[in-house]
Image: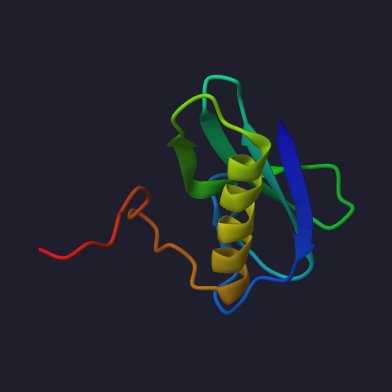
Length: 98
């Protein structure tokens, strides 16, 4: 299942794998497969090309229900709207104490 939303990222834009940081009016697409694989992509609003969000891959426990998919999408949308691009070389970094 795919979920999409238009948004404007906060300071720092959104770091992508293909082209680096993108800013301005964007569309987020959260792609979730039946196997629980998640891929996050963004595009400039109404453009044809999609870019993978750096660090934007994960796996969810299955089955992934529509409410869970929508919750994941909304959390990601909130984080990207808040801003703060991932520095190069830190993809996959997870903040935690210790």
